[in-house]
Image (cartoon, rainbow, N blue to C red):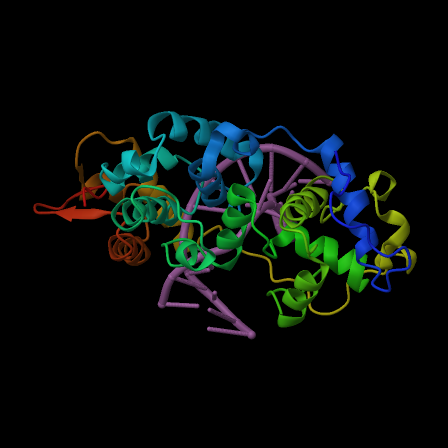
Length: 306
DNA sequence: GACACGTGGAT
DNA sequence: TATCCAAGTGT
């Protein structure tokens, strides 16, 4: 249901951005995925957990881990009681396990500083570990219905095409993008929150990085990029991330062993995951420095108890 | 601003 | 098989 309860906008509103809201929000009402963190029972904690897990990670991989996580730790205080290593273990193979550590740290901070409730203010959210500009805005908007520009990769791509007329947004978020996002944000708080979720979903389902489906797009008729004939991206190619042979891959292998272990693991067991000793040692040191691995006397290692 | 940081499905 | 890509953050 999309009818606005506020004063109708001038029929000849000079800002064309207003004509994007209604069709995108209407499309969202009928096409939004039924995701668990969008259900009312998810609450702010569910929204926050989902946002951590969804950073750089597809929805399909997040779903099962999210369900287990919320069943085990239904409130921030439940997670805060656990050793950080338990969060890392439960994170499984989602990737970027530092997120698990930070989510645990955020739960501790919420328990200590906010009485166990996910804070409502953007600045308070931003102060939590693992929460940056995007996640703070997302939690404030999705969980609390506030008016914030929520600029993730999906929204940036939708804006790049619909408003700016280019195929892809810049590599890093620019001041111009933030300004545009603020300008496109509906005045009404509830509508702004709806717009944030709707524009993001449009980017995730229709206005995708590859094989965008303009035939299903509710604003195809107003899309600057499409109207210009969908010119191909110009400029330097976005630098692809290599993985094979990197420290990241070695870290992943080391941590996989520790996640599966129920007791401290001897150095020799870790040595088996990678044959190059210098890189192997560097990767292990990095994991220890990051707090993802705890070294014990006698050359033993485990996930951190504190 | 450039980099490091995991993982696995899709093309 | 090789690349690309997925709701970013911290340094």
